[in-house]
Image 1: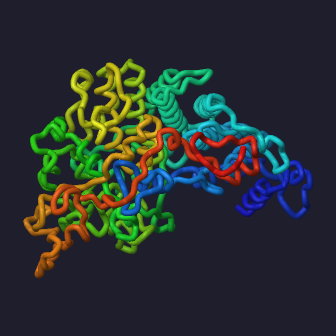
Image 2: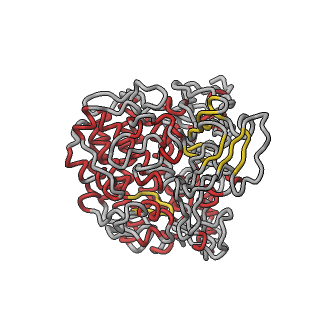
Image 3: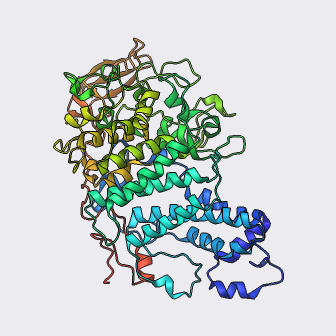
Length: 601
């Protein structure tokens, strides 16, 4: 390990690479002493996992989950500014990748060279996918550079060139034979490479379609076809299966909350391993349970999209707008009760029935995904960084959804395609199958672009209905896994961020049993009235002061009612700005449209 630290320091200092590597100091390890065997290559590539994979996707704010303090993206307008530095414009990991690729052939073990070249090219495609999502055109670098290299000051390369290079990298990872086809949830394998290809090709295909992005080179359908083919190879040849014990009321929740989920199931293709005893932990339980963690809350718009258990649409039910919490949560898609606290909720391994805790939720819709049994860690509490369930990076459910969406957008989707993808997800939770003809014959008005309050803009054509249904399924199934904002951006659906962030319906002052055990959990009283006494365990709040509703003493929870939201800027906000310092150093970098950084070039 000491050798790794030395060589890493040498290869990342701010001197030109040739200056460093020509010195060969006698008291340090040079590149001629390193990269000699498989262990060297493995140790040098290990940081890619830690540095690039998202360990906390569950805390992303979007139109389906918000915090007490809205993110700048959700607030919009002038709250979003060009940063001086940071903002995702970092290239340190890329330099490490290019270093490994440059020196890997020095290794005497040629099988190891092929393996770790494949791993590194997987991560380089992963790295550039993040850059394209955020910034669009970016400089392409595939060689190691020093601080004096003129290439550091090159202009941005085209999006098409970047995608072409990403495809070259990922196809090498898939086809070189360097990656195992065996299940290896914590290490990149061939199936993870196919999953990444499916993910970024779906993103690119739909981005080009909905943004009407006509670039010289390949069109939207080219990428959609690649996305579908990569996903289908996993579906037909991969060793993975959905986690299911035959219990549709628990399996979805259990999948994400159990310890060692990546090794106890065959659904995770690539995951981040956590272990409480080893001190490798994350924050998911505390995030949903402690008032200091932002008070994350699902939105009413999102909750309304869960179907009834019989497959009918909730928003087709008579009086759905003013149903009480207990009424609206009855007989719904079982994933609703496995994604947020509903009447009768008990934590895994616990006996107490718990109502939504309004000290940690601002809408009443309190998320529970990734919340573990407190006895699953030695401290037996929910303090920050006490969770150790594995976090998925790629799982089979996403592959199913990528496959169905790509084909639906291409116009080639069949009912059998739904049978081998989306309907397996529905079957796991006991939901009726999605029927393509039914969906297309009567698209859901709640999700339709004509409904500006809740719908998606821009979805048209013969497959409109089934595309909307696949989006419904994707949003529900992949909740809190870090997909939603990117999905909205690729669908050119930033308008959804401007839709209301409201919560459960309240008929007026009074007592509310939200746990379903017959005892009041929430007592609301009107301004000017005396605060109720002898309220037992109930949470007590004053309307208009502690709790804001959409219509004074009744309506939907509207915590952000008085927050100034400046709106999503369609001409600016689909791409992030390039930091000021980076443009000051490299005047060949143009700024993304609509972003004002004060620089005169």
